[in-house]
Length: 478
Image (cartoon, rainbow, N blue to C red; front, top):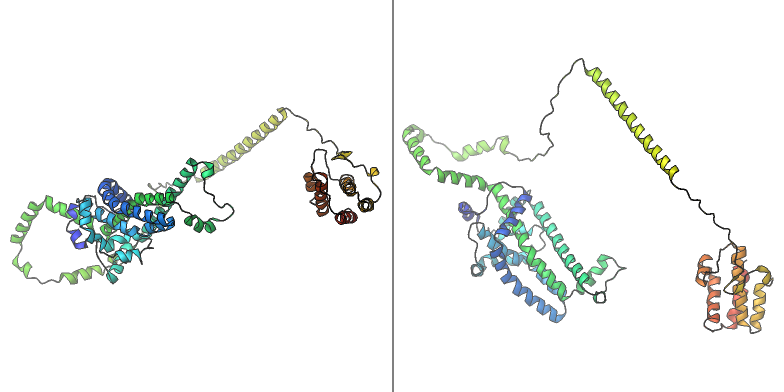
């Protein structure tokens, strides 16, 4: 609807026009939608629901549900135009029915829909700029200039509206996903990567989107999109009210309607009483307005914000008492410091007294470590071992007594750890504990693996391997 046509219908407005802040204007949009939600959602549902069902069905048949979510999201400007069409008529007291909306489809489809779905698709102030193209019908340079004028001091709020709206979408999606995770059994939960970052998993999560995810996303768009459009439309109305003085014009019209007869009488009286010479004076209103606008009051506009107390403090002069007031202030500060010192001292004394009154229990001293005489059924006393454990093990291995050779090497290693290296092994420890407490010695790991295979699995290692372990014994425990 062109601006001139709208201005002639201001008296039919069903909303209260006044100067509002941008956030208050957005709240007005939500109020408008709460008032006219029936015609808005009725027309909106007849367009959105069949189309969304068709897209979901086709993409479900091909197995690409992420494509359905993308299409539903990409065509948001189409749904926005339908919502704006209903609201723009409702604010003038003429909310259309769904049949009227479809009969007037050319008015909201033929005003730059292709441009909105392509070049303007990623405009963060989309809901605020939509009325410029759809309702005013401006194009090209005129539209860009109009958007620049309207967007001054308002576009940033429209951008924040889009950011908040995107977050609301995400919260609803995550809430639905969390609710589904709570209701589904554990074995039905979809596997998700836990060792990868969110950005590396994002494409995988999108490609793994299910039919339920697409349905939930379509419902979120269906529920939130009218609020987004209504808030942007209210920002647009508020900006035009500030620029064009709609509230002032409406107030003057109401005064004129109320006092029309009195004004008519005054005009007739002054018309008769005015001298004829006054009509003969030539004047140029355009030149006079230009001269008035040259004043500095009309040259710029500036917004200033500052903190100011509600009531100015009254300053009274008390001559002769300033010295006594300073002494009193110093004494008060000294008393305050002494009071804090006394309070801290009392708290410290109370804590000391409580600590003394608490029952004390002597901490048992740790008993000195005594090496166990045997581990895993093996004697660890050094006197029970041959002087050269490695050479004795090599002799046993060459004689074919591989199990005895491994047992001797293992027993010698445990004795070395306990009696010479100070490793505190206990009878309750396992081979894994021995390896951990010894600092993960590579030699000890190979020896324990060979001993486990021989003692528990009945798999005797080859003779060369046992001889190599015996040869490396001296190097490992040098």
